[in-house]
Amino acid sequence: MPVDSHLSPDPPRAGSLTAVPGLRVGHASDPKGTTGFTVILCEAGAVCGLDLRGGASSLRNPTVALPGHLVEKIHAVFFTGGSAFGLDAAAGVMRYLEERRVGFPVRGSRVPIVTGAVLFDLAVGDSRRHPDPAMAYRACRNARPRGVAEGSVGAGTGATIGKVLGMTRAMKGGVGTASLSRGALRVGALAVVNAFGDVRDPATGSLVAGARKPGKGFRLAGTEDLLRSGAAREAAPAESTTLGLVATNALLDREGACRLAAAAQVALARCLSPAHTSYDGDLVYALSTGKVAAGRLAVEALAVEALSRAILRGVQLARGLGGIPALREIPACGRRAQKDLICRR
Image (cartoon, rainbow, N blue to C red):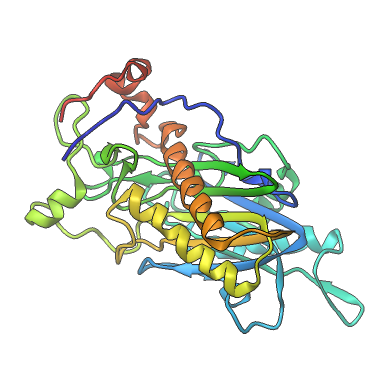
């Protein structure tokens, strides 16, 4: 199992999801409860697709992102901590959009179309404190078209990775975002990294963060190695989930958006070790906000790369909370990592 920490803990800016016109991102965090809420607003409407791969997902209103639904466009996607408790927070997004008269027109009124998903963070911080409608409303008020915060914020506040040896050997995950462009085409991504497994740099194939071996120093245990050898017990169910979203100004119908979401799942498979487990609720949303003509394969390739970068940034920019250390706080993987320091296994 190669372990390579040459990945800088302070990566250069890589753009953000909001490079795609029509999107705003907002966070609200509860450091005491170690949980939070992230919202992606698309008030002018966006075609939405969804692809589910993990075995422990929990969602609100997923059918609006699947072929066959009457409503073609949605107005917000949210990611929240709190496990299934967090689903109730969506009422705050509904209230915010209703006040702005954003939604699907019905008999003189407008109904906001909102979908989203939760991650499990109850094992960190105060499990009795959950994201609620007030927090979600605050995240909407905080939403901006630029300057998206990353790391241990919003839904990433209580995110963790590498749990095969228990929470005492886990590391911190978080929110990351990135974007790519080709001419007029824009593709952006946002990820909340809360994986059961480790995080791998797809450029090198090496693990960069995850379950740590007992003892002094920074030594990654290698979740897949432990599982294959039978050296680790099965984890408790539903304690993880990495949530991803890709967006583009390319013209896509809902079927095309679902295909884009499915293609972008490659990023999770490349960066998470393992991905899509029975204990993760791994999923990817896809949004189309524009009318730029572009080949689907090009959009898919850009989406995979953008989401991969977002996943890595979520781990690189996280900060330790609740007694869980972050990559940037591991002494051997700090500033010296920029000089290609290799942490010994």
